Length: 423
Image (tube, rainbow, N blue to C red; front, side, top):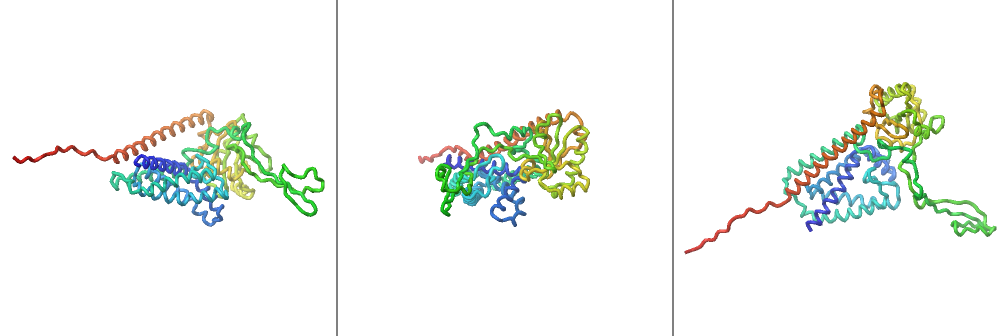
């Protein structure tokens, strides 16, 4: 039973740590997912709760995972795990049945599951949660209560710092299809032999005032007395969807310049992305405007991608921001970058740089060999992430080793047995 309990605890803890982590470093994406839920269930009046819940839910998941994985206040962790699964398992069953939201977002953008896959996954986790809950009296730690609370507090602090940093800059790990180094045209290709969308087509015919529906296999094509009226098609199986399938850049005059921008091999292109110009940071727009003024002198392109209408773009132009505005889908803008506005640098269709509006560089930093600079920065960021991952891995292993050693009973000291003899 100890081995089963240990495996269940480690498995549940690992899943919750990962789930909370990937959502915690992308608070904006998590808030968008909560808004999708509120809209799907006609709870639009709760939209103001989207961002607070985007932090609280992943933080709670993360701490429950830490509690179970490291055996720190494990009984509280078992309670939290059980309550979480009792709530989300029925919810994901409803999502699987009615499909109001195509992706539950349980693992953020790191792992995308269908609603039925999510429900089956939750059934397994619910079984583990029930086992740990019923067996919680055996979940003990030899660490003192104060030590356990201190460890949980430290991990909460780590989670909060990571979340705040990622929100005010960009997610430290980017799982979306527009991460740095992505060749966008390559992500738009549908591989040869990939499954296509499948539809069920129904043909409607009429005879003697009576209408009847037929399939494509049995419609009365030989009987001229039947008159064709209409047809309808229903999607029964979704085919392969490329990672980038809705990226379009449309000028205000209606000209589609997507291919022009992605295939341009003569110079660099800056894309300022704003999902809502009315809510865009004015400081960010001011930084971007300096780059927009600098770009033509260097032969660089500069476009603003936004779903906002002409009224908002005209308002900005009256304020002195005479950008080259282009229309792009709102969901695409939010997917490209978690910042409003956010800046991308493209070279031959490849993303060489992404900046939160807090980090948009001044023109003087981009005045030299831009390609060499960005390649060097990409390598430095990769090395930094690797170092951070190694340090985090060491901390996690050290904590696990500490809790395991502290959970091992101390060996009994040998005490010689004495016998009294009466003479």
